[in-house]
Length: 357
Image (cartoon, rainbow, N blue to C red; front, side, top):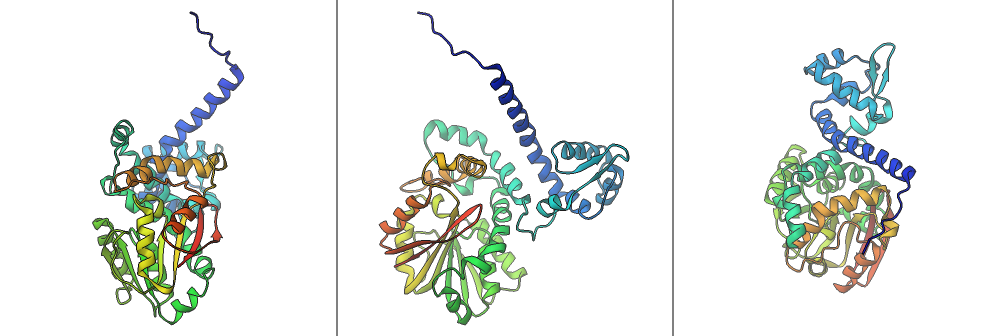
């Protein structure tokens, strides 16, 4: 019996192929962005005005021929501008803010470090697609934890002390006079350092199950001169030590956990009677269709490689995914016995929640 195939709309096909070409260029350019970041190419162009490939190569002690090809790729993608009359390239101030300034809230270098390191696990992720097994955070390339910190740090720098902590009921006052804080799933400790630096009378302990991340976090704390009030320990979310904490924080990690309800129960036990749990999660709606946008696309993609396999590698393996949405986070929190839960802040990339016993 003959099978009829749907007629193809050639205009739609050509439009889609155009989209694919854009995708192809963007995929390869991710690696070039990482090279530009690591070699200081964007930093050298920032504020330098129009520059030739020879001048940029001399400034960065790199090969002109490679720099010329790199610049042309950047110009084709709109990352830099090109003047054919002078054969000079320029990094506009807006692009410089995103690509050259690590202190900028718009800095994206870490996002591409994270993305390119994540892709190195493709053969393993392909296998777990077939087996249904997990793939732990610790099994990824070393660029995943370092890129992850650089990816999230600009948002934390811009919002944590100025907006998120003040939005919590009575927490900032406790931090100013001296509180005990557990930063669970702290990674390399960017959030921990921010809190310890902003509230010198408080004591912060960062916990993470990943030994290598904790070692790097300790180094960064020493370099920042915060070791008197900031420490880091290797411990999983379901059993980190201590009790009577005034504040427990989890930044972009609850959805990665195999047993988030178990972790939430442990948080409740570890909190002081009037303690607060701050939960920061990727921005998401409660339905698939509400997340079909550029931010949702990025988070679903990272979640397929990182968050979902991480959860499935652990006990329970609830696999919330990076686009869990407010309702599922609320369900986790209330299942653990918390009676108060509310959204206190929102950014283009994060939802911020407060939970109280």
